[in-house]
Length: 333
Image 1 (cartoon, rainbow, N blue to C red):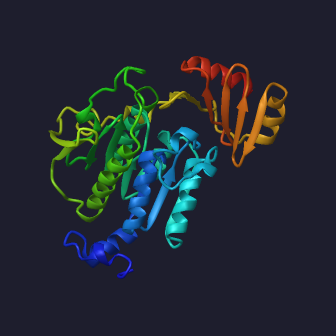
Image 2: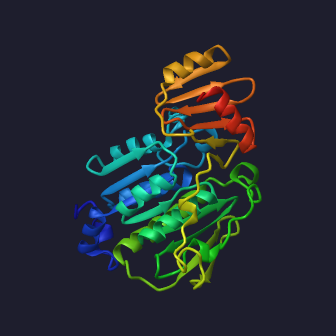
């Protein structure tokens, strides 16, 4: 280990004791798209010994220009599984788990307390608010990171010591009010740069857990070649870290509008779908293709990516109510 990480061990911020801490640390990677895949690779190469990867989606062709670890042959495959396979090749001895599921309140309540640090690879604010609730509730540090266009931002969160996401953004904007990577675009190197910043912040949270009582929001503009730092004070009246309210852990919406042209729909109750049976049933109505643990269905009304846990990504509509109706009609009767 000393030889492999020798250039990192000589850093006064790390040292041999710090490298051992990294080797025993467990990081939860919430989302394995552009941000999450780059962050996971940077953490593994830095010596993090255990990674839990969670992502609900499959790799699409338009993802390839900005993700790490995945290639064209992985299109159509679950991101979490392909990331895990690539990471395992980099370090066969690392403890890497992959879950192709939607990270809802139940999953956050289970996985967040087991982690030393959580990193942000998410693509929507609703899930970030839920993750913030879980991390503050269980006092697990995490890093908020977001990218769009040619810029991005990052803020480490030390629960109960510094500001949390709701100190920064007290209330989420109305659904559809913010641009997405589908509408505003994204420069390929931007997630890589923000992932590097996020990985460094996660390493610091592991090696220096006390840290500072306040954290800055860092904003990078790669096209304009400048960085800004803005102090974020902790709000005594913050609903989450001030008053100890966790409403996003209680939400049970079945639909989530994702970054891009898709709406995720959850089943009404936990279930295990027989994808072969679903495929045979829907083959009479349109095109059906099975690729690993995902069923791709193209119907006149919409397209679906159906997972064995009952989730589906519905394409062809931006309306959550319409997506839920199509799901109930074709996927889970």
